[in-house]
Length: 627
Image (tube, rainbow, N blue to C red; front, side, top):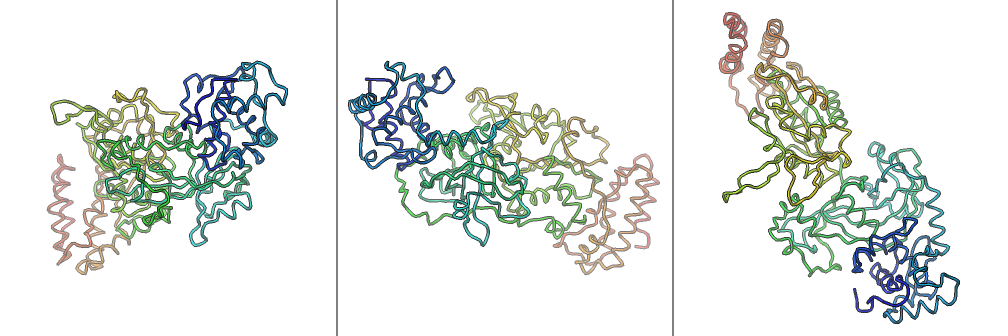
């Protein structure tokens, strides 16, 4: 706060806000919405707690009423104009005029003498501040919008469509925002409601000219280019009418950013609340807060956050290293999964992805050798929209086993290397944090042999949050091991976190799946496939001729028929046993199959028919007959 904004102690309490309103408008470039002025003064005004918290009898914060009175007096004196709806603007006189406490009180007495008002200072302080015609017009518009039954969603949208370029100029002229895709984001657009706020953003990554150090790592940036209020949803999944706010200088937000074309942000989330306050209320972003959050602290390796904050940034410098980060068409799809060696029809894979997107949780179950883990990782890659290698940093893979515990998976005490213990997040909670930090990008946890551990014990209280309709901040719950430095810590699972489990249904040592877990997952059974797709894949090896593959397929299907009749279909043997990799060298097809029978199928059949070895021998003989 400058010396010129020293607080006046004479007159009604709101007189002290005359200089602050002028300084807030200067900080905003001379023009701002009322809410932005309130937010700036709250942040920079060195206010006491009563000033910020006290309310009038009608429930309005006293601070807002005092600022309203200050605007009224400054307007009457010609320092502030409000000739546009809900917008306060410094006049030429206001831009160059700085008020001392004595001048603020003199201004009050001069204006006060020209209009009828309560005589006592205390009465003026508690009387509702008058509004000019522009403020009344804004209020009328607000009243014409429906009252939202629950918390509004704040929308962040893109305006660049592929080769069409930036459309925002047209949007502003036509008073709308439009989804540029015919087959994407239509559901999100239909959810946009009149009265909700919308911001135009552009996302990119930057390495230099940042207000904090990043240990050489690029940081995600989201530039807020414009804001507005939704007036009408046209219901076509494409367009909404928008009252765009007056143009203002773009502002840059770091860390918690979005790349997809449209994202809705809830004010009930701590991260979202900060972004909303920055975008729509003009509050500054507190970099230290984000650099202290585990996801970014780990990325930028900051032992001392204060050491990362910089003051030598030139905001006018051209950011030559900006790289656009808007979402593109997914480079890895179900067709790529098939090309990688999946023998299922594409329609089946699309159905699995649809169920995963809808339910958030999917279990691939089936006999041994049906490619459950292999497929789980590739379904995760297709959901993320990147190749398996590129998707690795958004994918966590682990295996459940009898000794795995809640402390390993969620959070628990572990040795800190110096004879003590530290509270450490497990794989699952790390994935939750990562997904929450990048809310428009899918993160996937793949759990192999999900029924080999005790899921209810391993997930603990988070088991209930796995349900797809509980992925909201309102469902947050306390953990068994809360962090002592975070009072009232509560955890919820974000919508962009997905879980894919695998389950071998032939393992007789495993108990039935807990019904509570089964209710929270969709299940898809994988079967052995010795079909044309399998033959085509294997046929890339010259030694695996059509005759060899026909014989192998016939014998494996005959073996599986006998196993299903004796033990059940869950004990059949999958195609993975007889599917070579592209790099494998095969000199002779018969020798290759005989080696598989001897080293892999023979021990498995001996286990299956441990109480009937003669049957196992007969099945083996049939597999190798004539070879």
